[in-house]
Length: 223
Image (tube, rainbow, N blue to C red; front, top):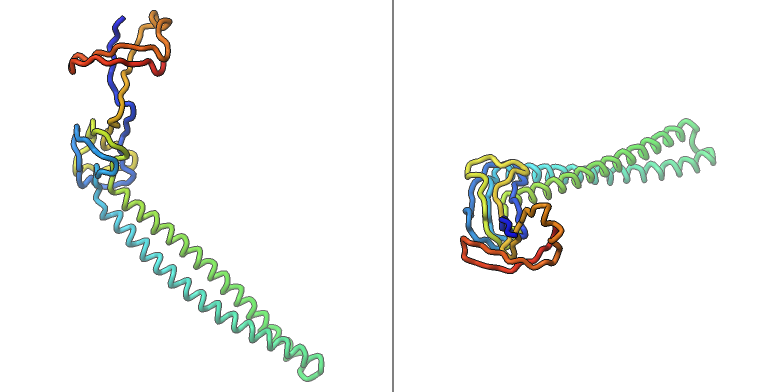
């Protein structure tokens, strides 16, 4: 029994954009052979570059704020140490009757205020460092997005379809090219149910490609 099939690449991929941006350039056309890492499509990266610059500016501001918060904490630590020493000294003086209860209570209040100021300063440092971490993550994400503006071939193969044109707006997930790996093909066959009992995995078949004048030997890989 003879059945008509369709020759397909064993491995194929749809090259899609990860970004929203205008297609600046197609470096390949249908039928072109490509090597892994070759440039396929280049998107306009001006918007991505603007986001990267904004993220870097935000990081610089966050680092300045962190530096100011650390300086404020150092001042608060010095004030807390002085207040603690004054508190211990006046506590001893109070025990010896050298200062009044009123004076000691004023010193104790300043001690508590200094401790509270130090706690606030430490909280501000923690918040500033968190903002720095967020800003660094934003810079890293923007840098990755800038790289994503260049779509490269994932493997050696051939471009089989061009699904967009230069100047089109690419969006995340929108297909731009079809790429087939060069090493290996398969033939998809639709066999009538009547003959299915005679087909098994590993069975040898003769595959004829009239357009190429070629006869190949094939093996049933999957049913």
